[in-house]
Length: 448
Image 1 (tube, helix red, strand yellow):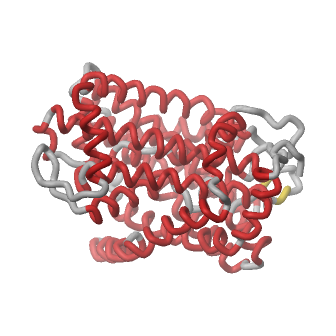
Image 2 (cartoon, one colour):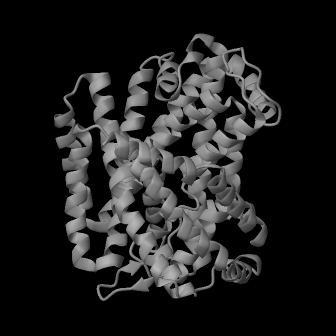
């Protein structure tokens, strides 16, 4: 097992190294320019995300699709991952993470557009879509579509299920002394109650859970920023300047070059918002929307909330906390975040609830991705068996160690991204055409 773990660790060093980072960020920038900066329509996108397209084809509302995508995207990486970036790449990593989110909005927009444009309706009236359908119907690359679906179905068991369940049981044990198997039974029962109800129940629960968990976490962050108010301005200035000049060791920070800050910041942004991975468009295809561009705009707000808002707030909280309390600077990852939140009353409990809800929501969101991928591969009946296997994996993840699962899942996530990026780049002409027609020519309210 150790040899297998070492093998996947080595694979990940290649798959998630500079070539992948350059490919993903390059795609973000290329699509931003090719589509004439759709980020400019952020206010329109936010308005559409809480609107309903009555009478439009689809299974769930645009907000329901967005909430489910956010449920899968906003996870422990927004908390622990940013802390790891800061402790390794210095304050400048926060700026690069934020910048990656800005450009990543164009990629998430593109994924949503293709998901709706190439979706299909089955005999039960359900809308099915995602990169596998865009690859097959838009490019005729069935073999690549099959590979994407296979990687997605397998990856969901890892990054979306077992590792999240393990994070919940570990936190419950360390914070409250709860036995892992008891926590496992509880979250398995909760997950089953939602997942066995299908996409509409998942979207309904996520629609209620996501605003609560995000608001709860942000309120905790605001309390920390108020406590650290004397250092907030300095923290923001340090984040900006350290992105372009080397960070000197001292003052609670490790020394970091601009390249190191950029590497860890960009990587954190890419991993956090999942723009380019191809997961979120699977649920975007189920949205009730008049035309592909409307849902594309709504999808792009997912990256805005995840990275431009939540990851940025987390970064400012951590940098200002290190300036205010240099003694916590030796910590990294989860330990650094815990040390920062320990400075406010009930802080550990606020952090615990945030991580618990973030991880549970990720379990719910990724279940839909994996199930739809399996249905594409082997038909509707296979999805039913997949759902039960996924529920069982929630309990399994709660009680076993999962370092090897983390590494395998990371590899599968990278392998998911590659076919999706091929799809986005080869269909960029189609993306530009539809964006011009609906967005830039003022036809956003037109029905397809």
